[in-house]
Image 1 (cartoon, each protein chain N blue to C red):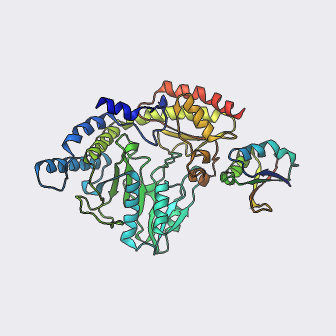
Image 2 (tube, rainbow over the protein chains, first blue to last red):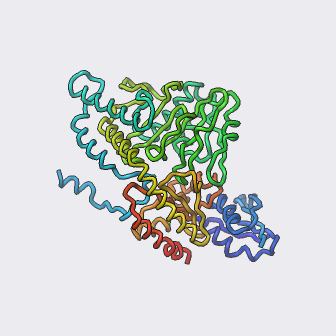
Length: 74
Length: 381
């Protein structure tokens, strides 16, 4: 999995980072967006819907920061 | 006097075009005339028995009569409160108080209610949230199911959403066990007729229809059970407390009457202008228009642009002469994104709400639609 460190970034920066770098993952692989921003919880799934990628869910990074998981589908 | 007035408003600068009518409309001309006349005639205590007091009482009764007529309700169902929020709190909590003591029952509400409803529910004690679909609609099955259980004091559903404009089907909900429905009608009152049935109490806010701020309207149906949820007062109307702002109530009533009389024309104009904005927003790359495209408020449209900072968008549109609102986290005092957009699964950043007042023109909307793509592209660059 590719993990994007977006700690401390405010919206829309985590989503811009996701859009810029999700292609670093192979199709079928996961991208984890680690973000402290409250909007990421809603905007990562919304981005997936708008860009035709798959939102897998939310877990925690090693330090307990929320991590939003995206599967690259195309 | 003129000198004072100049000093108090010095430094105030308004955006050239105000597309934020859903936050507050400028005073309707009908309200301004009435307000000025009533300031001198309606200052006295309407409870007293002398001449000036009877004048104030007469004006207050007139205001109630005019509002009742405009909303097709009974005169004794109308109360004036100190704001829309106050009307929401009194409506919701008054219905709840009549059924169960605070802390011993639940408030059920949709996920997209105004924060006034959410705060009232949390003050009451325990709330149950009913989700919405991607257009912001509540399904009656969900609302009815959550209202079962015997421990529900009141269920709250808005007439229409203040952020995305989606209209709820209030009249279609039949709640179990005699659970009363509180309807927050602040976003639609004056613009759309109230649902004829299906609600026990409702709230409206005068500054959203061109009345003065500081006037709310609380409606409690004649058959509804309602109890004062707050400390009592000995005013003319047992449902409200504090000294009545008679001139403002009368001005609010005059504005409502005028807005209702004009609304067929206003709404037709607004629907066409909003459709124009919806098309312009839809044509932007990576942008989604949020809310029900058909069953919606006539004057309001919300959209979200991927990769754009909401605060920057509002600021840049203001610089170009357009005042708009936003539900993005960076524009909120709490730094939390709009709970309405979140509940709908809509994109919360890069969000703009355009809401038209009665004076909005085709030329203003065309200019907005011309400027918008430049602004969005500039912020994405």
